[in-house]
Length: 327
Length: 299
Image 1 (cartoon, chains in turn green, cyan):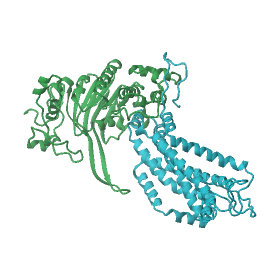
Image 2 (cartoon, one colour; image 1 turned 180 degrees about the vertical axis):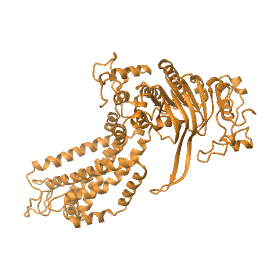
Image 3 (spheres, rainbow over the protein chains, first blue to last red; image 1 turned 120 degrees about the vertical axis):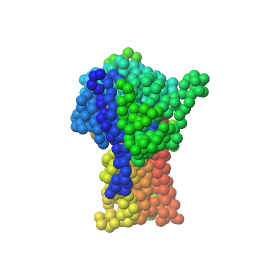
């Protein structure tokens, strides 16, 4: 395997909680991302799943350097972004872009499609100003929008079209890595497939690496090469997408997989759901030991003692479970 | 480097469809609001009359005609004269210049200070925001009439000072509104997207945040002007504002109120014009709020 284009080493993003005004006291820490090690290859699609609040979006924002990294390294093409200067970071942004969750909030309502797409081209001097209109038209065609709509405003488009504009904006700088933070969760189901296909097709055509974030394994299954499952700021299982979904190893992944509905009613009726008791624990006071033990059907006393590391399980997979050999 | 309309010819064969900008959209909605259109028209007429009217009149605002005394409306003096025989229409128009002028100038002062102050507090947040906004809270708690009376006592009665005093109080609310709006917009995903694209802080504030805060600012501005005019009238009524023989709508209403039992027109005309202007501004402000409100737009 060649060297990865993006590599995260023990990345932590903690947010301090303080109270009082003027003289702020530190009263706690939200460990939104707590030690994530991950790598993405050129042209690879990595699915990142986990329930709401597990730190997926914070991880995305950490990689994008939109929130400060508490510890660890985010290395893009050999350059550590967590320690980069403003100038280095600006240069790195040409290779690293993001598509946001809500296409109704991620486009400036006062800017036309043209202005939205031309802005990155002009700021980063991607092409001579005279070529900008042609480039914008080309970007719009790439994402399946007619260039004649370039003078229209976001409110004149549907959710799916807006997400296409957002994707075109991310593509404007011709990045090598795109992070898509639940890009279809705000869209109608019928539109979701179109956007997923568009993303998959763009990755193939442009040899893009994609980190695709979702809270739903069935969405990730179709598009991803590999899947990472996140729970409370940590990755608990990592491996080839089909492998992980068909043979989940970690008890949490098993519960997630059991929640995927199947289209066949007979199979669907026989489906055994693993119901997890309780809610995800608070990232301010995570449980001792394995963060999953309070909800885990296989938990034992030893699970409360030590945090199980993400350890290799076979040649392609990694799982973080202390009782892996027993369950 | 402004990304505006693309120069022609375009690499597109089909004709480019023009979009409906949110501003244009708001204008179309405003035009459908009858009260707002009435307000705009009434304001335009009043302003024009106050600016140009005195030039066409035969009387000056301080020109007395003691022989005439308080004449009823009609004849040479359309709206009658006051007890000193001064033409009421002329005084009304001159008074309008002062009242509208105070309204606009003080609002402009409030707007400038408030927007800059609020945007800084909102954008940078944290301790700076806490200090800045607690300062505003403290200033809010100062009793305004006493503040103005003190100013007048120390610096004498002059109109410029009146602008400053009123502006210095009205900006507090503007700062709070702008701060709140900037904080809300700052957390929107399109601002994150702009940061992800590597846009500079200046470009983010001016191209992405301020245009989206402008709506509430415009609305609050139109609603501040009548408030300021009322304050001016209130101060003039107390004798702290504009001094005779100069007139303002507040002064005229005060004089009229003193003599309303005998010479009712001295109260009726200034009162009617003042009320009409305040109503118009409020109608326009309400109309603008409805037209510019993002939540009511076709999202």
